[in-house]
Image (cartoon, rainbow, N blue to C red):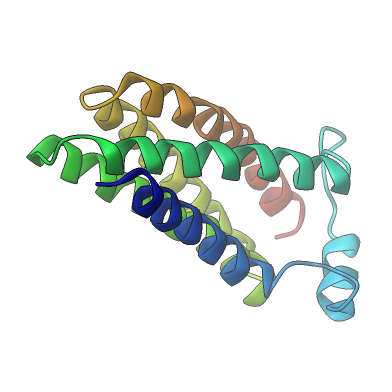
Length: 160
């Protein structure tokens, strides 16, 4: 695939996932959601709001880079599997915000997060068979969602 085409597809997919999830996040234009999230009992290791924005900017960049590298790789069944796992990660990115903030379901959000741990691990493992740089770019997401699973479990437990 051409560089420009791969970049546009990967970048657009990441932006679409974030825009989908962004519709539900606790932002000033969503005051009821912001108030609900603020009222939740959270553990002391919950990062401040700006950390989430910084982390996701980095993670989105790396997700886009990983997708770009996979799209540029020679077509093969392994590449198809790696791209499938990459796409599942993107579904999780948008889906988590919908479940947690849109539906306000802490239990289901934990399930999505655990699923994202599995999909991020699968994406990294499958990408490694196609392009090591793509696999390395997937590792920060895996680390983040592992942390997020611990955090989400604690939030769920404290707010049952």
